Image (cartoon, rainbow over all chains, first blue to last red; front, top):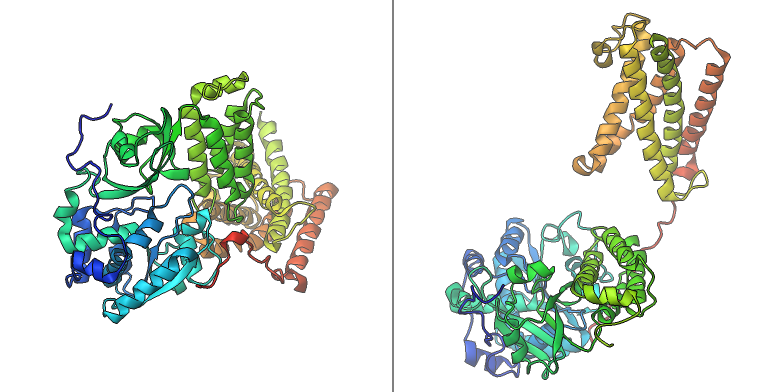
Length: 405
Length: 194
């Protein structure tokens, strides 16, 4: 099922993560030089030719968002989003610590492409001190045409969702909002607003310097470029690694020290992702992961060891996600705890017949019924768990567990 | 069979009137934005909608049975053009007008997501015109208009709608004074940059 269409660029490769990692401006300029002068049309054209997609999870084409905000014809607002509330993800924190200048270069390109008058960095409190010092150095060097303001991202799962980001930058609690009007039309104070993940902006800064053709040398023709992956769970050296899309799962795990024990499955795409088999030849790409209801998303890869119960782990994550609800929408407030509790009953051998069907019924009931996709993502993860650990579901119903025995 | 259609036409007309009355009262209740008639708010909305759809079912039955009935001699054109009927054209024409208003209100409600709240609300206001027109049609056109029970039903309905209308126009009705403050999980509250 895998391997036949393996692209030459689909390998572990350090681009954003290459070179020194002190985060200092001098190091950055010595390595990459100043950004060439590009106009809005050139920036959007390069993003399009490179096939750059958002790295925050949704994977939306960046050039379309840029041109939509630019087409609004009013002064725009651009926001670099480093709020990764997900406990299993660390790539945005790492990028902000090691490569802040790439992010700010990309933010300035996005501001120029959209005609923005103000720019924001939305990041966890812990990261803002260092980021502020980098911005001071850049101001002294005359690098940032559009001034950048800092905004604290609350440490919460849904705080990085686009409309929650807009709410926080507007001075309100970072809760997701209804999508009656898209933020690209009316976001911060009614201005057309561009929210981009910090990794996306760093890639844009690289494309601005080295061009779309260079960018496309990594990844596959359908999904060009590299992505940052946070590899965790049962691996020897958990952490952030970089690879072209389509990289073999085995190569990605090897970049994080390799499996620390025999693996049962991997969670790809994070807590809103899905379980895929721990097949070393499985390409980490949208196309290859789709059959498992998963996607590379924001690059989280969590390895589940053979002796851990997949249902118990899925129930634990579902419980976490239920607790992380913003507390606005009924299906999320009431539905997610019910799903999590029902799945926990199944995982903890408090089984009664009809439990799996009840989980499925609840998952369908909450999907598409929140202001944001938090219920949908949670339902997707839970359904994926029931599929991936189907044999264990049957075992749990008769009081056994295949993994922990 | 002929008589069955005729009786059904009369009966369904009366049932439609009662249901439309319930719909208007519930609609005012739904607009109030609070619990009403001992029901939670979502139930008021749901019952308003379901009662309206049930009223439409009886209205369709009323019209179709009259179309098929050999005595009433209702024509298709009478459903579209008011005041040209064979029997009591004015009072029958009021029925046509009410039917078309109901159709407009139902269609715009089904398309509310597409046409937007403003256009939908404008058309929905026509309900206040539709209901008295329908009542007048029943009293002026109905075969049973001289019976005590039809008058009793009509007066009860009128009293209910009058009460709902008075509530709607009363000073206390206009908007809840305090919108429930928007509360979200505390962990999403903002902090200052340190």
